[in-house]
Length: 280
Ligand SMILES: [Fe+2]
Image (cartoon, rainbow, N blue to C red; front, side):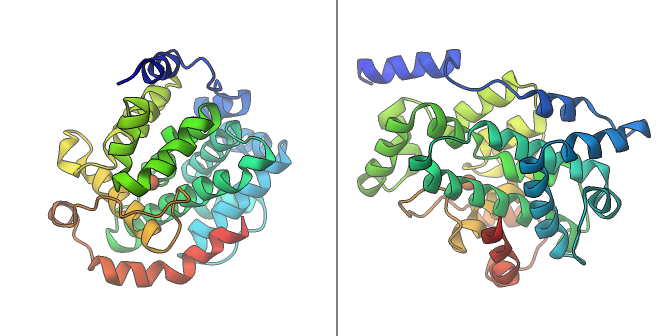
């Protein structure tokens, strides 16, 4: 590790340049579905922020269309997908909006954004349709798994580009990141998620999503689902980076945990649904 790499690590650890959670995102995190008044409050928070609202409706429709019929308003979304899923979508969308930056970075930002929404959507639909285990965390963990890449793209863009360039020689994102940064986007994402106070399951999935799922002691099933969904998103060309390389896929390890149709069948299943992500 050279001296400039060391400086980057210190910067990242202190999170000097990274954004703090927005007021809207904090308000959303603090809402609970226990009190009925919070249902209206969630709708109000989303409706008061039109860019967030349009993205939330777009994402809600992709998640829901994989299963049923279109959603037209925030209230409609609340009724059809429920408080928790709507809250998770709104939280994810408002977190991504923190990382939005200049026009020159727009294309690479959109790659990250689309990859993330695709992964979250695939996780959510697999859990509802195939595992028959709908869980509030599946969308959030899937959609936020690459938050470390967003952080790098936002605050350390030069290094982000260098990692992309290095990928062609290294053929592994982890190796390229370690060479340039001395750390990985999984580690950076976990630090950030912990600082923001996101749930432990989200932090764990962020940290282990590129490893085999059994590495996570408490949440191996969710890690397996996100690992698989990430792979499917990449196979369908919703790749987070400009340089396309094979991402690690621990198929046997995943299928030991999840009882699902073969991955090629799942890829076919999502081929059409996932194109909706391009409309966002
Ligand atoms: Fe990913």
